[in-house]
Image 1 (spheres, helix red, strand yellow):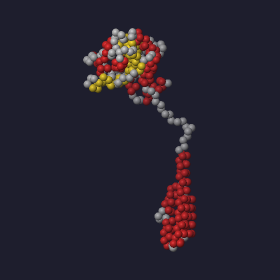
Image 2 (tube, rainbow, N blue to C red):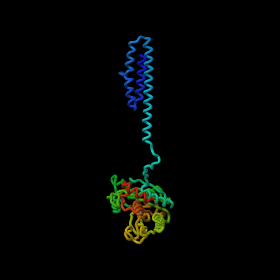
Image 3 (tube, protein in one colour):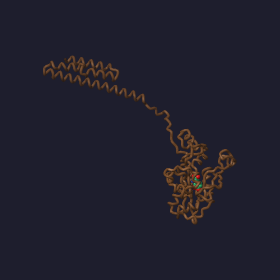
Image 4 (cartoon, rainbow, N blue to C red):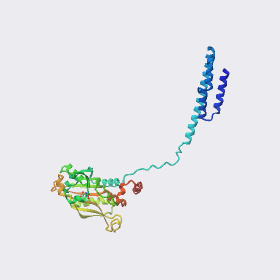
Length: 347
Ligand code: DAH
């Protein structure tokens, strides 16, 4: 019996040595330790022994089993480590290789131009304020001297949300009214308000149903059109270069009197005439004027004491001029090639 055990142990040890893989070791394990394996066969023989022999042989058999288990485990661990090392070896990262370039985002070009305008105005003591995009007809039109039924409303094809009282603002000018009403009629005001505006326009190269304006308002005592001209000169020089000249042309807005279109000398041809300025040497950049006495009155300011000027820039127009972009839709589509081109322009 003892001999059989020794023989079996030797046999297993030999076979284990010949194993080439974890799989083969596991096969050995299943066979030798399994129910139909030789160790189990030996333990069946216990039945035929007397008590004394049973105890002795049982112990030997147990020791054999333990020894086999630990030999097999040892082998399995060996193969597991080997496999792991091979895997690690294969998956080693070569840290000297150049890494993949992670694309870094950049601010939208409109954001950029708005910030630029904000900075210039803030340096002149203006506040940057905000207003709701979902607006009341009262602020968008009524208080701005555009009563119901007035033809000036037709020029701004408005998105009405609720029975002619709630709308998507068609201009940032309602923020003028809100600011004056909030100020209470007894304090000077200097503010600009950049923000989204909406009109029922069909989108094309120069129209977008949603676009951005930068509204401006200054209210104080003894303000005249020459203050607007001076302010505008500073803006033009800061945004379009020190040699920029400005001019006013008469215009009409319901909320300003007099009203003007503000032009800057063409920065592409320096005023000589080119395709950008349509051979005129001038480019229109905003509407502006002296705040209409009705508007001042509607918003709690006494026009006998207070005067002011207001203006409205189209942010896309500024950016298109400054960066040579010829289609307003460029700002609102997600074509990465276009965005990358802006990156390059930003240097
Ligand atoms: N809100 C005008 C528009 O959308 C632009 C404008 C013109 C704003 C003159 C003003 C202004 O504040 O004084 O066409």
